[in-house]
Length: 250
Image (cartoon, rainbow, N blue to C red; front, side, top):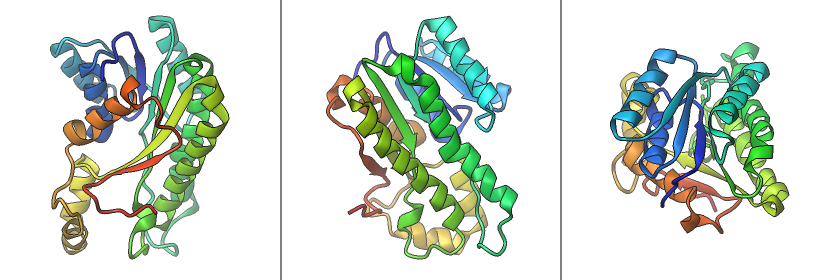
């Protein structure tokens, strides 16, 4: 799983799943650009990486802004010479029934999800050629038994999965691998959802065969580190549920 000498860029790394991924990549030797909207949270993640002996660069990046993303990639390249691993994790979550959702909420989910993924993959493409790995964050929301209230979020995440598959097929000859993960993890967002939807959350969690929600670093981050390593160098174009066996993607 060694990622020694690799440079990783992780969006939404100030907390939750993104933070767990950043910590796990750094633990395997990658230098990690920790990006997101809130500098104080990014600095906390970076300090944790450094305290463990790794290298981290906290960078404010607004994934709904093409200029901000370009500036972020440029800074990482100027600092460390390139990008070998890209993790598109940041996402605004548009929840609500269709009649209650505003155009603005739907577009925020689309801009921060599929559009940001599309733009950042293309910005990093020149540096990923040769040995690059992209991991995009999908969701099993589109596989829910009851989609009421989750349609906009699921639509954005399914768009990311489609872009992932396209990138894997188009960029595979350039030796760039691209996969999507669909995680359940005890992030601040998941904790908020459980607290505010106790009955629905109980039903949802009871359908996880392993009867627990994953840990952001140990269950999600470490798998991403494996997926980015040479040990997974023939895994490409796949959507992989990291959810204790709940989703059936067949």
